[in-house]
Length: 435
Image (cartoon, rainbow, N blue to C red; front, side, top):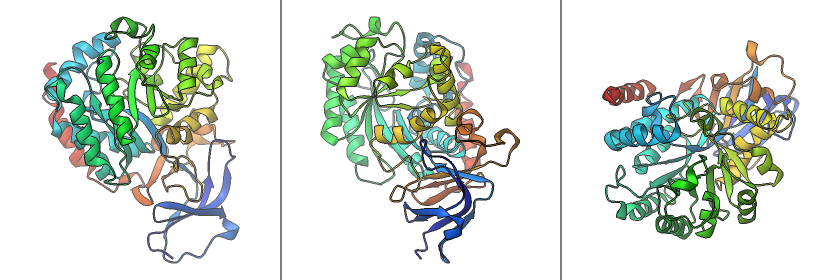
């Protein structure tokens, strides 16, 4: 038996949102892949494998956060209870201009990685500045990541001259392409109200040239159309469509304010949507109509957004908010089920991010796995997998495996020193009190 094998025994198994839970199972991982699983009556003899006891544990695919600005953990709680335009223009942008540097991005991204791993997230799509440092921090944490270099049409951290924004993004793609199997580089155009049509088209062309994903915030607020730079369409989505930016490698973030024509345009283009309900709640942006998008089979997933507007990176909490918001929006208790929310945070996000071997417990898939302690008052009794959405939280996660490597065990991170990270972030944050 390969010495890098991991055998998890006597565990309750959740393989995918569309399959029932199975008790008293074993799961075998070899190297970076899930090798096999079955009932305890057929457990294999694996004398050289690392063994993990799954008694009173539930094993499921690692969660995937499809939208985050990891380094913004520094700004958690800095500017709460403000309207989106005030929050962004008068607080976040000035704070970023003053305090975002290589050290800040590295350590604050590492803090985000700790929070995500401790709450069961094994893959994250990140978008920010100084993204080389973000990618390095995520790599060192042991997470799988799709980091995207931010592009914006005014002086930004690391790119003081906006004329160099595309070149900076290309340097990032060149640096990280095929460098490590845990890192898949991408590009992130901030929005159609901070990027000109020319910048948007150049960024999309760059992404296409490298076969990379193109992320963009769109239709987050009711007023966004009025803010567009040189609008080419009668809505933010139609503006992007007129510029030729919508295809299967484009990921649209938020999409709160869509009309029927916007949804039709997105559906026909093959573009995907990532919703971030708690960020939208906090900034009073609105509630994305996921039910309408689901009925049109638009690819749709879930993200947390950054800590400055959430303020949590716990995807269990996000799934709960997602499902309940759709029920409230439509006055239909069946509008979004717990299983749909689970799919959006696992297999849907995997497909959208171009990582098809994630999101399920299936032989041949990547061994990105989490184990939850179910021997707790708030998780009993267990009737079906919906309890994960409506009763679970990130604190229930005890063990995290990424790419066949144990990253967290018994709620202790094994890849980096969390105390050092907390100290570094507190030191950086100590200078923000004057804002």
